Image (cartoon, rainbow, N blue to C red; front, side):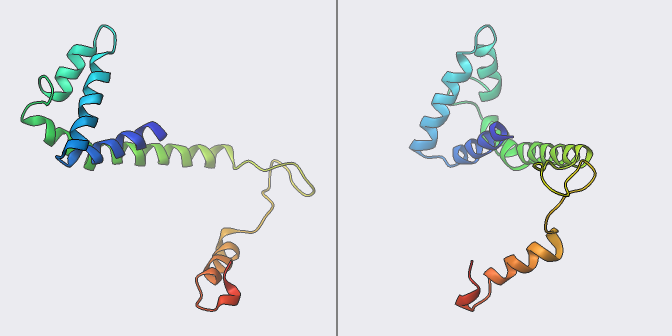
Length: 127
């Protein structure tokens, strides 16, 4: 997930057409081209030709930034949450704790009430 999030940030950073993002794209082109055996063809395919790329590259970058990578991140988060539901949340050993229960304050209303107190205008409630 971290790698996909970094790729998402890089795609958004590269959409701006200025010297800084152009240099980042040049470095990314060099990194992609340096992959053994398939790097040259992969870089040509992604960039739609040699650097700085063809007409289709900017729209590919935009589609990746706005649609593909966020959908992949949402899918990975969903899989992660499904794994947590299936395997249960971890807790440390202690009194009244077992594999069948989770000991602590529930999210609603316990933590919600405590966190909403942090947002109140009264300074005595600030956490």
